[in-house]
Length: 207
Ligand SMILES: [Fe+2]
Image (cartoon, rainbow, N blue to C red; front, side):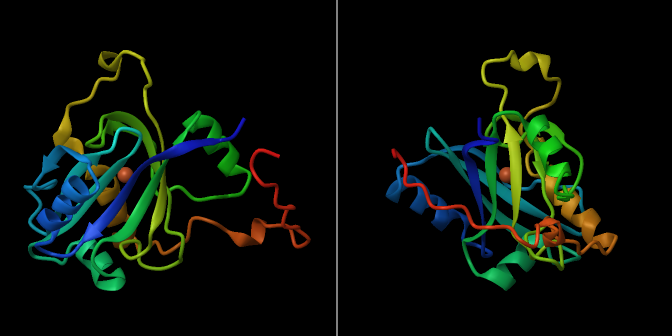
């Protein structure tokens, strides 16, 4: 059995003032449905915040994040300055079992960004783990993977959390913490890759 099941959602960072236009694109051009709109994830934060709007396609979602700069430039604005408008900040992969996948990652000394969170991410309740960036450096500027597990039929009321305003706080805070502590480590340590590792022979699907 594989470890990852499917793409859960893709999160794009958009330039200032562009979230409406990109929502038009994802809704009218691509046929998605806007299912959640949070215009300020951190209303009490004097430094910075972001908008997060969630578009559902049935089998997967797209989240749009747009930076809100106050006393400081938000991490989303920094990401866009580095990568351009509508750049992919993270892809979230749905795992068969998040815990099993996390145990597996330990064998490779792969580095999570922070603790597993249980919350509503704007699409619904889930368990999620953000990883450190694919590239070394400023945590705000690197793209990264997220690994999730949705409840899939388990009673939601068993998961005791409050709704929607929580969305976005998870990775925003974890990246802020990383920047404050000067953590520039990447997710994957390639020194764990055996020197003689051979690329497996390509096996076309269905054969
Ligand atoms: Fe996400």
